[in-house]
Length: 221
Image (cartoon, rainbow, N blue to C red; front, side):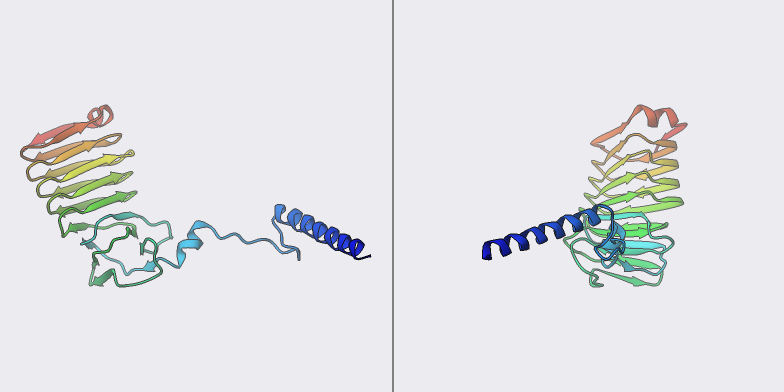
């Protein structure tokens, strides 16, 4: 009798699992309500801190990403691998200061007019920003990566051993670059109308065919 009872219980459990799995495949709970699966935006929402509008970013941390916001009209900041904390940035007036941290920091915004890399050996990645003017000042050994950016007048002033890479269909009306010694510029898969360059003893300067086809004026100071 015990074996028979155990067999009946096992069959009921298996039947229940089959029914629940069938409901799950249909996207509903066992009580008939719809299953809710959080999307990526919801999963990371608690890690993004809202910011007030700003015009300037001063960066003291390596590996900072600045990208067009995907959160409607709101702007925010996130540090990888951490909950919401405000100890890695501060805002004073219309300036956002990013303090030194080990993790990657991502700033979500619609535009920024001026960026200053306030320490040596910083890596800045800018993607999907569409705006009329952007100016960046950097110290030594800094690296800028531009992807899918569209800027009317883009200015970059850097110290020694600076590297600029542009790719992923970035577009510029005028690019004005001033570098210290041993700078590198690598521009691929993009469009530049006017390019002004002032640099000494460059390590590398390269443009692919697409960039050259769109170039109407090149001026070396």
